[in-house]
Length: 184
Image (tube, rainbow, N blue to C red; front, side, top):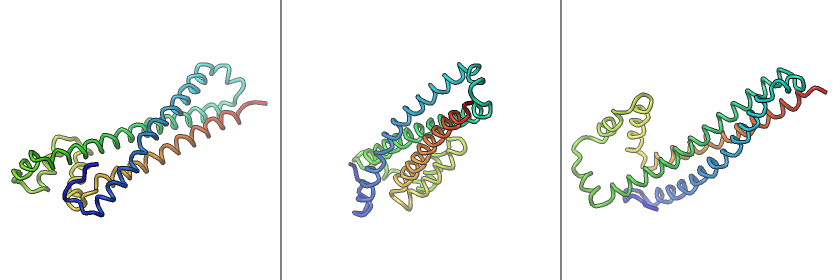
């Protein structure tokens, strides 16, 4: 693990801990694919046999069950997307540290003549809203907190976990709604 020289011993320990915890993003992302695939299969089966199901399951249960399963699938897609963002964000951060603290990077940093706030704003310029504002805010936070990127990724991991739990819960509720709507 690469530790930038500007980090204190406490910050190095925190970064090591944060990066270790963030390793959980990939298994969550990978595992989310399986329930989404299962939900897609169930939805395809339901939609392809809708005429038969109308006689066996109440219309309200079919509508609510399908809606819940679709929402669960969308949450699963977000789980995957956030996992990709976390992994790529860590890779970019590590790459920046590796380059900036090399001899070439140090000479490039020494040659920067504009204030850090202005540099942050200029880096964010080519991005559209809301990404521009997010990048500018990240740059400002990074000036005062050397672990701001890692902390942001931890928050994203928490959101990813909540979305994963929501996906599983809504998928289960959708199946339960469909099964309780079966006519006796």
